[in-house]
Image (cartoon, rainbow, N blue to C red; front, side):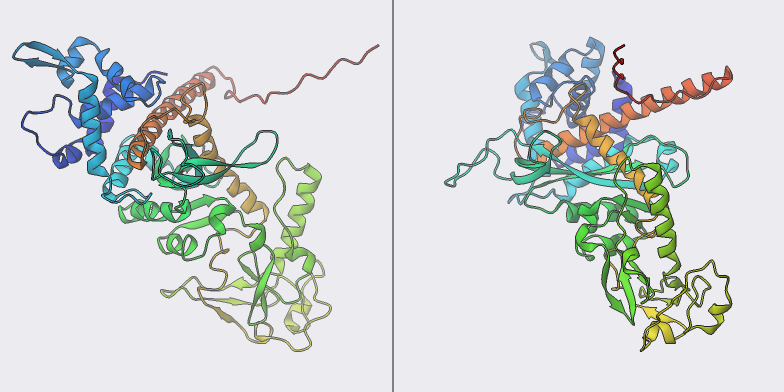
Length: 493
């Protein structure tokens, strides 16, 4: 799908990155014919046309524009000898100056603040105001990008891309589920629909690129915190167990402090009982009664495409578990402390240690064997929970209940974002897609690619909304996606 040139120019101008980069570049004796604005426009045009991220393709994209646009953008300039069209060497020269200015003197596999700001501003400018206000929920994920360089030799030595390193990726191909690759990790935060809200265009709000020896989780946190510092509210952050398994100081605590609420899958090593606090069992980020059945505390998430009967049974067990959860009485104070009380005191279960609860209806669970030596959570009216209790696993909804399952299902927007940039039908970021080596070139190209993808997603969204409005005017239901099914073989007579 072709994107109008005027749209791409507006994105560059609204972001303001071209002027800021141009001001940082050294001024030569003779002025450069190719400016940063035109170079970025050529990169976006190249990717919008489905071409690979090669500078030769950028040169071709610029020199095939209409002659009036070439003259306006400086692709054709008036020299003393007459009109001069841009050469490939001039494209390479401006690109090299930009990469040098946005990089580090001693590369370490992480982007500079300048480079990250360019990515943030480009992506933010590619999203219309209506798209920014449609949702504040974000789905986080990372994927692999291979470098064009070959890995260093086994015996040691250098290669063409010293910033790249070995990483691990999961594949869906037959054989082993994982494999090694040589390159970088691309992290992205993609817009997701709000809980019980309408569908929204799943555009990428933020991205960052790091070498594989850097932790992609720790690299994404400052990018998200910068959004909050810029006045963009962080509400729901959806992430898989790769994020949730990190230390609380690396992921959960900074985002929670910034106002975000986490909806994340828990790593198998973090599920189930993980100690006690004043006698209450710490499990899956919550505090439960000491007499909670052990089988309920071992509940895990349902597998994909679970049968309806399994879903019903699982939901009933989660509801039973929720009755044993200590009830929260206060929100977090300025230091992160809050108070909870026994579930029998809130009328969720019947317990002999709370005589008033024994008058409740018999449809509530009853504690038949209370602790012989009741802990503080059973004897005190309330207990105080400090911020370090379940700091890593605490989240918005009880794990793995039905409310958590429905909310966590929105995380697939991040997976769809990576699927589109790895689709050979559009633009595949497989090895060879970009033949510049190093963190800065790949980061710039990845930011431009996600910017172009945002425009494609937005255009497809608008077309779909217009089609649904037209169908509604004709009294027809909205068009739905049909799941592809295998044909059932005919039964022989």
